[in-house]
Length: 80
Image 1 (tube, one colour):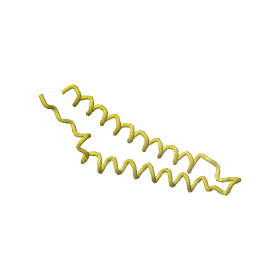
Image 2: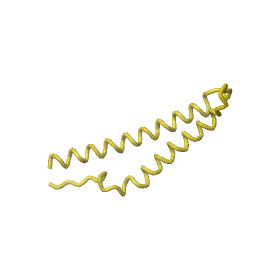
Image 3: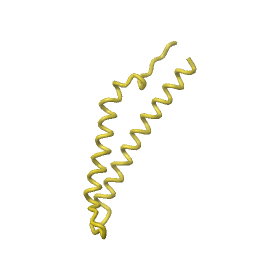
Image 4: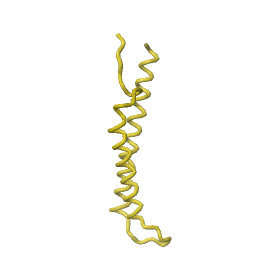
């Protein structure tokens, strides 16, 4: 039983890490899109990169919200 509780904690930690990563991607994308100047010496459109990073964060967060509850490793089962 002690091993099962550790597995639940580890699975929850992974989910929180995934959620935090998605939120960090969205925040980084917003910074690139709105706070960084558009001028670039190398031809890289920073605003386009920001939009792509925001989209990646949103897709990750959406996939966690949709597929997360279906993952059996994330379900909490008490066997008391």
